Length: 99
Image (cartoon, rainbow, N blue to C red):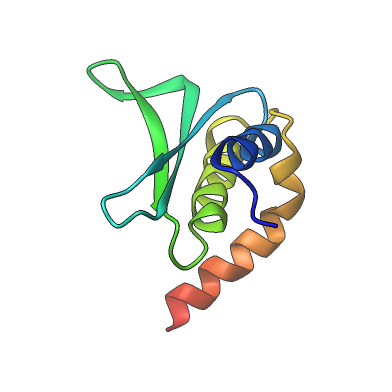
């Protein structure tokens, strides 16, 4: 059974923790686009820091990895379930860099 977009969004929001706003949109190619926005950080002109990845090649994991790195770097005291996967995220990053 395939999870609905809203169910996926709820799961991602729970994993990302209280500093995140999570939204899943539908891209032009009908793939999910995972968007995670920080409720505290801005990058320019009041725009929130965000990570977004398309659904191909496991966009959920790619967006969540980027969010995890943001939490570790900018919010070291933050508590979020996704932080338990920081070692695996680091390993995936090293694998991508070595290709």
